[in-house]
Image (cartoon, rainbow, N blue to C red):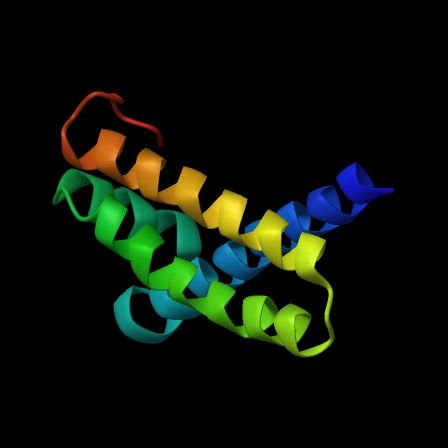
Length: 99
């Protein structure tokens, strides 16, 4: 039961981050998502784009806290921490080209 709630929060964190990346890239960069991500990667800005997209995780996190869904909020936080680690790996060139 608890693992299921954390997993749901993790998936919602993933969806919120993907939606944030999509919104940021289509509104501010290029209407074509893949093209804007390739340009961001070639300019060493992919980590920044992902970080700006991950800001959207605040919304489900605080909604889950307000509704007393602590384990779902924990899943969102776990995904956000893993996203931060991924961004650090991208920015320090530990991970090669993704796209």
